[in-house]
Image (cartoon, rainbow, N blue to C red; front, side, top):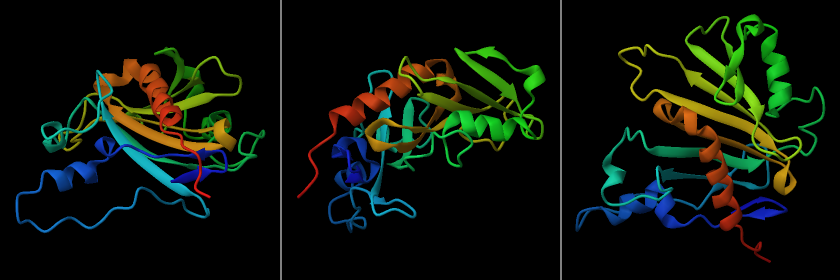
Length: 210
């Protein structure tokens, strides 16, 4: 699936839930609807991919773990698609974390009660007081930031799968947007998880079809 002009990915089947669903179907069962390896990103001629993996060894689906709907070890990459090449410009719309933070500090986040947590600057919500939004550098690369949104305990009885989400624009590979989520028990490992997402992207990169 071509994401940008600089990035085409071939996601191994073991990291796609639909592939293991078909392999685990009982004999004689009707096969699930065929799933494309990616979908068209909204408003873009390029595509979008999504994949999952499991901690602590960054493995894919097996006939055992695919049955666990609320597995605290699962990391879900909800989307990876092309962004706007100017998304990191000052004040630009989109998902570049410094711009997202500036927009949210006005009404949604309480800067006065912010503090350092998990190697990031974290802000409690003004309206959604059970949410924490954290911002900071993803790594050592210039201009690369991340924004996390976490659900704070105590969790409501109907919370189901308490998770935190990472969402951001990266200028790598011509500019991409990415969102992934994991169980709240893995929050302290956010940097390790994010680094592994990019290791997969780099490893699964292929030459675009001609």
